[in-house]
Image (cartoon, rainbow, N blue to C red; front, side):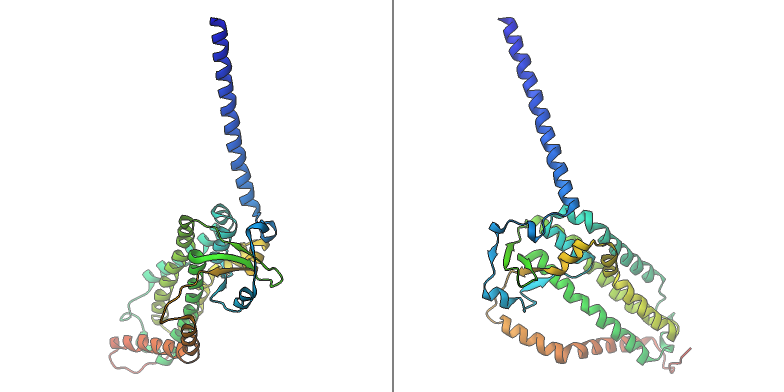
Length: 310
């Protein structure tokens, strides 16, 4: 009887060890499969389950013309990260697009920091010796190009936080798939791809204006304007150089539907009308007034001497 009890105890111990080995093997296998899927970027529209999709109706096809309803991600490092994170998962996004975003962020942040510490003050520079029309032109074109990024960051925020559905940009593809991303994952995507971009954009905007205005001759004013515009486009350069053909094709061909928000006063038709007339008659005059206010406001440091061209 003691022998049979010992035999049963040994067999149960062996069974528990085998079960633990099997469970650990299953966990390792699932982890390897998950990593393999993350590296290979499986999960294009052709690989998605059509049973989870709905067929696009007439309203959906009409809304394709509205850029505020169906949004395409920006073709830069941050837009690629957002798309891959939503379409393939956060692990895939960090593996395939994380280096691009880190490269763009580090280059832009480094330029902003060192330019800020290297710039002289307005009083110590030859700001008053540069003709005012040149400063107005340089700051005006710089602000015009920098403000264009605001719309891209606004759309990126909408895709991160409010994307409900996705579809192919090809009208022949009439299947619309749900966007199933948890709030925590959306917050991580927003932090990594939108807030970091906003930080570098704000830094480059203020530092770039100060850097342009503190140059000591006409040629350096022109060169500094070109340099700052180049630094702002580092995320697009990183996307062109570091994104795979699959990611570039998916970012270009995927549209995301944004959750609609209604307001009794500021409805969509009124907002579209305001946007239309502001774009036609208000945008460029506002940027011109802003550039004029910056340059003329800093003229207080000048003592009345006529500007000269070094």
